[in-house]
Structure formats: C-alpha cells, structure tokens
Amino acid sequence: MRFDLIFKHADMFLDSIVMTLELTVASLAIGMLIAMPVAVLRTMRLPYIDAVLRGYVFVFRGTPMLVQTYLVYYGLSQFEFIRDSFLWTVLRSPFNCALIAFSLNTGAYTAEILRGAIEATPKGEIEAAQAIGMSPLRMLRRIVIPGAFRRALPQYGNEVILMLHGSTVASIITIQDILGAGRTLNGKYYLAYEGLVTAAVLYLALTFLIAGAFGIAARHLQAHLRPASTR
Amino acid sequence: MHGLEPSGALRLAVRDLHKSYGSLEVLRGISLEAHQGDVIALIGASGSGKSTFLRCINQLEDCSQGEIFVNGEHLDLVHRKGRRVARDPRQLRRIRSKLGFVFQSFNLWSHMTVLENLIEGPTRIHGMHRDEAVALAQSLLERVGMKGREGAYPAQLSGGQQQRIAIARALAMQPEVMLFDEPTSALDPELVAEVLAVIRDLATEGRTMLLVTHEMAFARDVASKVVFLHKGLVEESGPPAEIFGAPKSVRLTQFLKHVRLN
Image (cartoon, chains in turn brown, blue):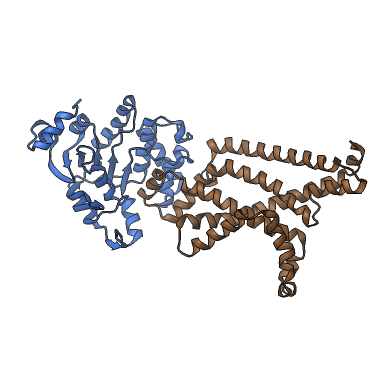
C-alpha cells in the first residue's frame, strides 16, 4: 500500500470530497423541491396530472441513473437545436448534466417516500383538523406535511446515502469526484487499488456521518418537532 | 370562559336526517333539538347509528337527506357527484368551528405538544393573538387537570390524559355545542372516571352538549335528556328519570336489561 502517494495527493482528495458533497447536496435539494409538489399532487389523484407524474416516477425509478446521466450528457448534445439554444450554456458542463440527471432521479424516489408518508397520516388527525374548521390547504401545511416529514425521515436518510453512493456516476462523465480522484491516482502511478481504497474509505466516512446525523435528527424529531412559530 | 347566555336559545337543530351506505339505511330520519344548556345523551346498541348521527352533524360523514341548523344558521347542503356536501366550504368550516367534537380515539395531533394542540385552532382559525390563545389554553388545562403538561407530546400521555387534552382542544375553539363521540370507550376502565369528571363539570356549568355514550349511569346522572336510538330511528326519548326508570318501548326495556346501570 503506497500511503505516501495517497497523502501526497491529499489536496486532490479534499477537492474531490467537496465536489461529491456539492453534487450530492445540490441534487438532493433540487430533488426535494421537485418531490414535494409531486408527492402532494399525487395524493390528490388529479386526472391527467396524475398520469404525467406517475410517468415521471416510473421512468426515473425504472431506469439506472447511469443511463439517465448518459442520456443527458451525450444524448442531448446530439441535437443541433439544443447546441444552438441557450440550453447549451447549461448542458455543455458535465457538472450541470450530472446535477440535472441526479436531481430528477432523487426527485422521483423522494416523491414516492413523501407520498407514502403523507398517505400514512392517521385518519383521526385529519378528522380532528376538519372538525375545528381547518381548510384543506392549512391542514396540509400544519398537520399533514409536518407529520409526513417526521415519518419519512428514516427512509429519506436511506435515500441520502444512496444518492451519495450514486453520485459516483459523475466520475464517468469526467467529473473529479471522490471516485474520480481515486481513479486518477491509480492511473497516474499504475496502482491497482490505492486510489479505490482511499475512495471507499472516504465514502464510508461520509456515510457514517450522514447516518449519524439522521439518527440524531430522528431522535430529536420524535420528541421535539415543533413549528418555529410556536416557540 | 366566555359568557354563557341564559338557557332557552336554540343552539342545534337537526331535522329528518337520513344516511345510507349503499342500500343499507343507517339513519332513517332523526330529528333533534338542543337548547342552551341541554345535555343530551344518545344511547343505543352498537349499530343503532348514534355515532354516525353525531358525525353527520359536523359533516365528518355526509348525509343523504335532512337539514342541520347551528345557532340558527342553516347549513346549505347540495348534491354533488352522488354525495350531499356543503355548497360553500367556508360556511361548513365556520359551522364546524362552532361545534366542538371529541373523538373516541382522541385524535390529538401527534407532532404537536399539548400547548400547540390547544392553540392551533384559536390562532389559526379564529385569528386569536398567540398570547391570548396561550392564556386561554392555560386556563383550560387547569380546568381539565392537566396544568404543567404544556410541553408534553400526546404519545407521552395516558389515554385519559389525552382525552382530557382533546376536550380542552375542542373547548379552546369556544364552541356553541360540544359533541362527544363515545369519549370513554377507548379508555382503560381506571381512566374513565377522570374523563367523565371533566364532562360532568362542563354539564354543570351550562354547556350545550350531545354525548354518545355507553356509560348509562353517567347518562342518567348528567343528562337533561336521553335519546334512545334503535336501527336508525329515535325509539324513545325523555328525561333520564323516565328513560331509565319507566321505559315505555319494548326495545328500550330490552336494551336496558342488557346494560349495567352502575
């Protein structure tokens, strides 16, 4: 094991951690913005809209994220009208392509997690809200969503970890994420495993931190989930 | 508490209420009036329709026929897609806010503390200032014997405590009429008394209440009027002394034979 070579490239690995975290966190954030309306709308079962949303979820959960990333990165650039349009300023960056594919992917999974949690709202809590004369929108905001987030937390923690691991797909389209840095190290010195072991250790450490954070959050929210307006 | 008017004013009137599940008619034309200060106990075997009747009053269930008046205001119901629903959802919400509903299974909002459960309605529905709502909640907590538990979550409380909070939550809306749907049926026997004591208190102070219950002794002691339902109809009604002391109908006589009175 050539530890000396690994430590010599500590800066490269540090940068790669930042890249992986940026990509993962940004995708999760955008994915959540997609997932919330999708989940709420899907529980309403509106005609037509529901078919479209179901199609979105079906396609993005039904195909590998690697294929989705390829399609955005290599596929879209095949069209001249895209290369000629303003879209090209976004799509010519591999980071943006990965971000788009990852966000749509985690958005679909998160929407399903949230939908399940929303639909698991105890019927009695809904009735209690109706009985005091709450409007459906306020009920959604005050009763359904806060309860659903709490219920969804363990599953969402899983999704965050899966996205961290899934973000390795980015290294395929030239992005220097943690896996990318590992492969660079291997390639540079014709090493067999030093770079990959380093990458694995870094992913393991990040996963450990995320799992720990969600564990703390879960314990906290079980007892202390309180709207900011009432404290 | 807000000033209770002298007895006499008609708080709730239900006329000829019908409800069917498919071909099964569970309510076959029930009428009932509650004046200020009335405590009306609804009794009857399970399946007689008493809970359904109570839930129809604030439209947790839709009814197929019949009219509902709360404090003189007629709830405007129309047929839509095979159901009978409020023409104006805002009117329904306004009427609901005047009817305090207490559920068999408490139905407190589990992600909110006791205090948050209590101030949610007053602040969000009535637009009450938070400080005022908290003060109201505090006084209600005192009344139901739960002072000091403001920060507790529902899951940390016993069934009896949760039900007392649920009663306080309904009272916090300052309703015209309180509707109790078997408030002690989900409780362990040793917790029933503490909840009944709270309800008895409310009856004494002149609250207008409808109470679906299996607690016959309680109905006899607390109610001003008892209504016996059988198969979706009012079989017999009257003052508790008559209902329990001198039942006229065969059904009621039979029913009373099967329930304990104390």
